[in-house]
Length: 297
Image (cartoon, rainbow, N blue to C red; front, top):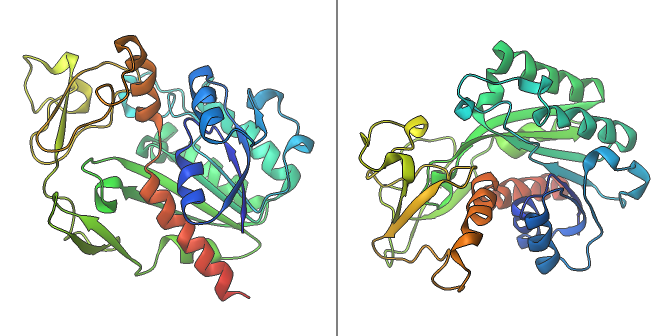
């Protein structure tokens, strides 16, 4: 059972994805108070630290895999032209993560961030991350994966970086012909898609989101205009919690109706969901790591 240390844990997307395929979560690091409460509920016995800036490597349990989606605020294209990249207060926390990696050198490192990472500072930020891992002795692979190819009704493109210590196994994890079971519509069963292809995405969705800035505006405004999509996909929930209306056609969205949470909680919940990774993507990456590990024995 591979042991996982989770950093920038949020509400545990990485943690749940890896746990679902048999890995053991042994450590979490998350500063946000609301997210800490979610983690405490689902992983009450896992050691947890708050601010990564005050984390000492000796407090991290032995673990073969480290994962984390370091903050994207300074990298995201949604930041209205004010991106500071890795020089920013939030996304610059990558350097603390890298410092911890350097002190322990776990066998596997998995990171996630927005596609804006690729062109931040004209590509210099992404180059810095790749070279930093390379200099530590890691073989590095990266790929943009879209959640809609992994059984979700949402287009959520994210950059995933996989690094394997002193080996080239990372490339085998992200680039192969493993098939993914996707559900195209309620009660229609499942079909299979391959991440290397473009033919089988989710053509229909059972939920749609309208964000408050979009009401009365052109539906083609795009994510900057918080546009309303009706083509079978939804935008990523706004990380500022500004989603105003959620309507459904077949399946409930299950944010407030089934949990009896008060309306004021929605801001934190939408923020957490908007920042979360897609669990099915993490499961796919985790299975790839397990297959590589088993093949090497």
